[in-house]
Amino acid sequence: MFFSIVIPTRNRPELAAIAIKSVLRQDFQDFEVVVSDNSSPEDEPELEKTVANVADRRVRYVRPPAELTMGEHWEFALGHARGEYVGYLTDRMVFKRDALSRLHGEITRLQSAVISYSSSGILELEPPYRLQRPPFSGRTETFDSDWVVSLLARSISPWGAPCMLNSFTTHELLADMKAAYGSLMASVAPDAGFCVHVLDYVDRFDYLDEPLMISHGRATSNGAGFGSGQLNASAREFAERIVRQGGLPFAPIPEIVNNHNIRPYSLARMRAEQRSGRFIELDLVAYCRELAAELTLQGRNAPTQDWASLETFMTAHGIASSAGVPHRPVLTRAAQPVFQVANDWLGINPLNRPVGRFASVEDALTYDETRPSKPNSRHSGFLRSRDRVRLAAAGVPVA
Image 1 (cartoon, rainbow, N blue to C red):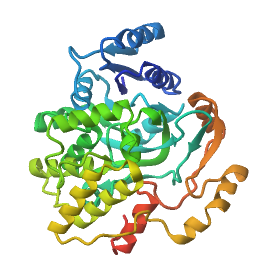
Image 2 (cartoon, rainbow, N blue to C red):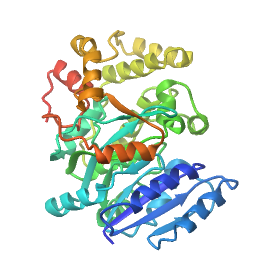
Image 3 (cartoon, helix red, strand yellow):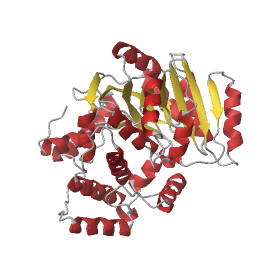
């Protein structure tokens, strides 16, 4: 078969069912679905029953012999994929109907070993949902791993960097990488762990600048919980496990557990193990600025000990505090109401603002497919606009 879509899940059978359904409705049919269930024993029967009721030979249910960490589970699930190209669809994501056919076309045309893609998202925690559709060019571009690693060292995380949950990789390449490194995803954050392994092993990869899936389930997201400082049950379990394991020892400030610090942890860990020589030292000024930005956005929910750790580190390294957090031009902020009206009434999306009001994820997906957004940007969506602003201010050329 051409594609293996791995759906790793834990204690969220209702969300996993939506993800499975989105794959089965694809207009490209040469695939398998591997549903890997890391649920606690009381939640296990429901998902297994759901898969059985699907009654499709292409959908397989697997379960590790014991409950695993997220990274260990993703690694376990990878071993069950048999397709020529392997990618992950988390239980909080759904594919658009033509996602696999679009990817198949580009992979065939370019003979890609690794190809990533963009996504839309539902931001609301409960209905009515609004759909955020990003600006995109519709082009497929090739990016050098050297350049992407240099961005990560500046604490810039490209939207299109291949993280397995937004990309497909050949089975052959995955086998070669496992032979070289052993585990590819047994990290605190398997998507970030996989990304740095790919960037170390391959010199370049392809990126299809088109949203092929929709993410949702923000109320159960680890990342959303960290970003807001309001930890849901899943994020709390995730954070507590990291703390029990000693924090993030490769990060400059190991005791801070949040979105931004997980990425530098993965980068620094790969720098110690790299084969390519392209993983350079972190820019500590940029690192501290992004940590401060996340803590600022958390507001009252930001742990006081995290601010204390950051301030102590900055003082020790002679790094001055910076007040600028949003990275958004004044003109953009002032024009926001006008652009929102354009979104709602004209159906355009110049600033990636949410549209519509939907009762369910399926309704949002139907809207997105019946009123598809067209390429609407001359810039690649590989980088967020805020990161383009940062690079321009630093005089760094954008590929």
